[in-house]
Length: 131
Image (tube, rainbow, N blue to C red):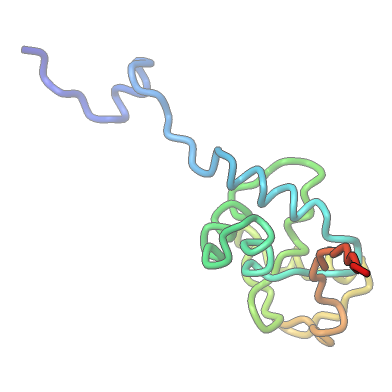
């Protein structure tokens, strides 16, 4: 019987596949929603979770944003509820500066005029009338 090797030994030897988190349909929907946030606007983690089809998954959205390194995904536009900056891979100053470059006013760790810059996608509804 072969003794069990620690996971690190298995990884070094190529016998264990690294576990990749956030790879799936939900992650794709989250990134797609984030890409649609226009410059100068922000959305909350909860807003993005709802747009991705799981309104109670705001923490999962945060985890996806934390690990996202894809170009073209404006992760800095996703913020905490109530206008708090949330995180940005531990670099809140960078997030502040990116938001300020888009003319979003930031004071400390909060977005000023949060209601005015919050982006919520409105679903267009087609109304038909019957006569």
